[in-house]
Length: 309
Image 1 (cartoon, rainbow, N blue to C red):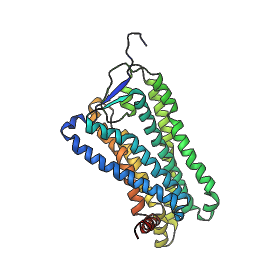
Image 2: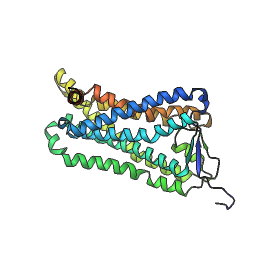
Image 3: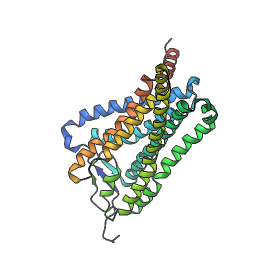
Image 4: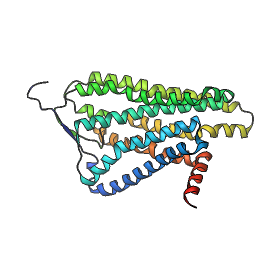
């Protein structure tokens, strides 16, 4: 780096500047979304911990997913709400990199968790007689821990490369949080290596779990259609329908965002479309699992019954 270059110590997140007159309505909308998201996910997390009927591998993974979604929303939405209310979009360089690293690590962790959950459903539907011997409590704990570790290890090399990359201006980011591509655009050095490594990491930690998840559901669907009775097919499908919907929403949101062209003229479209994976999966997951799952609804009724005499 040249001596007369000024190193950036903070970024300015422009947020939804094009909707300046709607800052307060946007604040209220996202505040409601955040409250509902946190309440729903924490509620499921608490139910999984305290209701003994939910002490099974499937609900153990669901508890991990709910905790992850609560963390993910809390990394992005509170700062965005503060910026909408105060108009101050300034974020320090270290906080920006931390936000990006945590967000992308949690996305990678969710990919791994959804893959593990699909494997759990594959065993339940395709190998029911061997399910309890294969998916023991230590095994489910190890799979969950591996998902978290893999997710956070995935982006360490990218974090290291970004820390070595000089940021010397401009410092305005046309986004509402520190996302990967807007961050790269602000570097004043060649980012080819980082982009290549980012692609490799995405393939390993996002595409690979997706393909494994897809493979599990292909086997599940084939097994379901082989069941002779309609009632049996329906029961087998219901055991994994909620998870299949969650997987569809999560990967559908990611695909819609990352398949959009990265041209400068499409930047606003990219920014608004990123709301799909920032807001939709964490908000929808608790409703899907609570409304479509008898055990979760029963656990919720039991908790409410104990609280309200």
